[in-house]
Image (cartoon, rainbow, N blue to C red; front, side, top):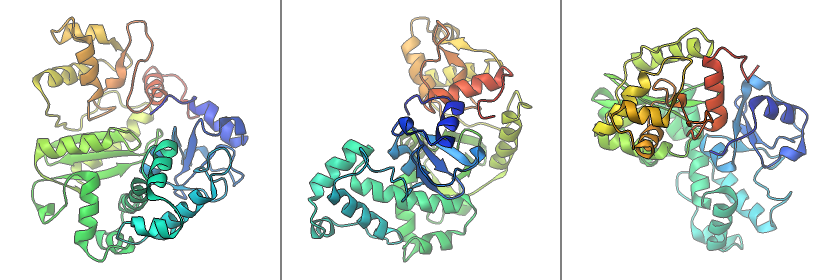
Length: 354
C-alpha cells in the first residue's frame, strides 16, 4: 500500500469534494459497501463510516463495489467504450458461480487479451481477478456481518456448498470440508478506526491479524496453511472475542499491553525478532539497528527488516514500533499513515481520525 495523505487531509478532501485528490486515494463507505472518488457528488458519509484506499485494487479486494455515480474505475474521466462493456459483463456476473468465459467477452466485441492488459495496467489485476474479487469480497462481507454459510453460498450463485468452499479455498488456502469440529483456523473480520482487519485463531490463540487491504494477505494465508496443515474457515472463538474487546480498549487509549494468547511459528530468527518486538514498551520505538543487536545479529538490519515485515500479527506484535535510525517511519505493510496513527495513539497525541 502506498503512503497516503493524513486521515485529516483525506477527510477534508472528500467532504469538500476536492477533485485534485481524485486518483490519490479512494474512500470506501462501510454502510453501503461502495467505494468512490473523493470528488463524488453523492451525499457524504460520516467519517466513522469511511475506509481509505490508495488504489482500486485495494478497495475491490476489501469487498467494496465501484460507485455508479462517480465511476472510480474510469481513467481520465471516462474509459474507452469497450471497457464500459466489459465492466457491464462483470456487473451482470454478480450472483453466478461460473467465471466469465473468453467467448462471452468476444461476443461483446472485446479481445480478452486486451481486457486483461487494460485491467492489469489500470487496476492492478486481471479482469477475471476483478470478477473473483467482487464475488468473494461480497461473500466475505456477508460472513463478517454474521450471515449463515448456507445463505452466503446460495445467495452468491453457488448451487452447492462445494462450489463455495472451492472459491473460499482460493482465497483462504483450503476448503472447510468437514473440519469445523476438528482442528482448524477460524477467520473473522473486525472493524477498527483504521479500517477492517481480518483475524485468524485456533484453539491455542491468535495466529493472524492483518488489514484487509494489505497486499501480502493472500501470501500470509498460504503460509498459515503450510504451518498449521488445517482448514481455514469463517467462524469465531474465545480468542477472537477477547481480541475484539482488547482492540476497542487499545484504540480508546486504555490498553497498553495485549493479553490475548498468541501463536506465531516461524524460523528461529523470525521468532527471535518477533519476541523482541513484544518487548518494546508501549509508547516507545526501536531502530532496525538496535533490534538487530538485541537479537544477536548486529549486522543483520536487512534480515531484521524482512522478519519485521513478515510479522503476521500486526498491532499486537508491535512491528509498527520499529523505525529508521534517523527517526523516520520506514516501511509498514498496512501503510505509513496507519503506522503514524498507531505511534501517535501510543504517545497520547490527538487521534488523526478526530
